[in-house]
Image (cartoon, rainbow, N blue to C red; front, side, top):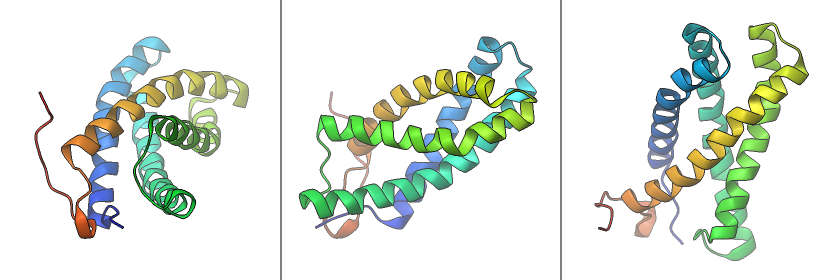
Length: 150
């Protein structure tokens, strides 16, 4: 049974967050009528928390998937569940931080976070499919780059 290596998981988490924050920061500043600097801080803190959560969640999810199904291959329903469970956990971790930093209520932070989660839910789904194609799981846990099919 092949699973992703630790270094591959680190690469996955870092790429996910760097690309996500590059899209999130200016879009959130515009959407929520907040200074780019505030959304940048929220983005960096969120990315740091999300990177750690991403690494831990994906490791746990893959181990659970192997226990339940005997393989790490993700079907479309499993990918949808994966993305939704990841984002639900991240909401619980981030709402208090966002509320405190922006000086808003937990309810307002939740409403803001729902919009952010909607973006990241779609982004995570697309990113993970692309990542699996660019860096497929190889025998013995090794990965190799290959071009996306035309």
